[in-house]
Every structure is written in structure tokens, then in C-alpha cells.
Amino acid sequence: MKMNIPFTVCIMAFIASCSVSYQAQKTVWTVKEVQEKFNKDSAKFNANCVLYRGSDNQAHHFLSQFTDKWVFLTIKKNELSITEEKPYKVDSVVKLGYYYVDPNNHFAKIRDFN
Image 1 (cartoon, rainbow, N blue to C red):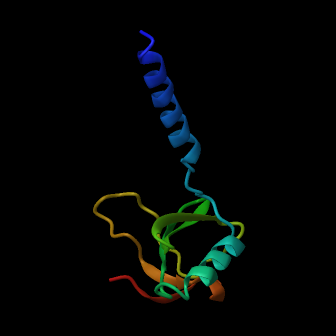
Image 2: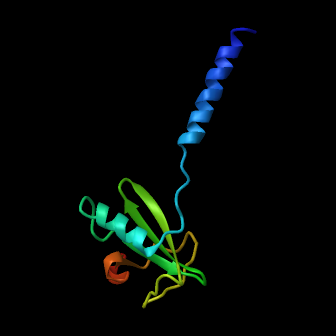
């Protein structure tokens, strides 16, 4: 029985350390946050890295690869106006997005997503 106590403590410490190091992915972003992250990372990665996925009643949705992670970005509609809005659909038959945008130019369309 005494041998099981240190083993149990080690397992509990491991589980606790995993849960502490886990960080939930940020979902709602501001325009400024996206621009800052884009400007920081675009020198290292493809400059066309923000993909417009569509808009719903409350927000605009984007997909980007900042550093080494794919990030789903949601920006509230009251903070950003998109000139060429498309419907946001969460469906497996819909492609990842519609077109690439430039966060530094009011999220204007750069080119289509193929």
C-alpha cells in the first residue's frame, strides 16, 4: 500500500501540470490584436496568411496560421465592416474560406482562396 502512494502522487502531479499548461485558444479578437499578430508574424511567414471564412449576424470569421498554430479568429461585426461579405457556414462540404485579406488595409480582399 505504501508503494502506491508515491506513484499516485506522481500521477496526480502529472495530470495537474498538464491541465495548468493547457491554454484555451483565444476565439474573439479585436482588429488591433489581429493586426499586431499579423505584423509580428508576417515577416516570418506567408504575407497572405489571413483567410476570410464568412460572416454571420454577430461576427466575421477568419482562419490564420500565426507562428506554428492554426488560429480561428472571430471579430465582432460592430468593430469591423467587410465590403464583400459572404455567409459563414460550418459544414464539411464548404471550403476553408472565401478569400485572403490584408488586416492592415481594413481586411480588404487580396486574392481568392483556391
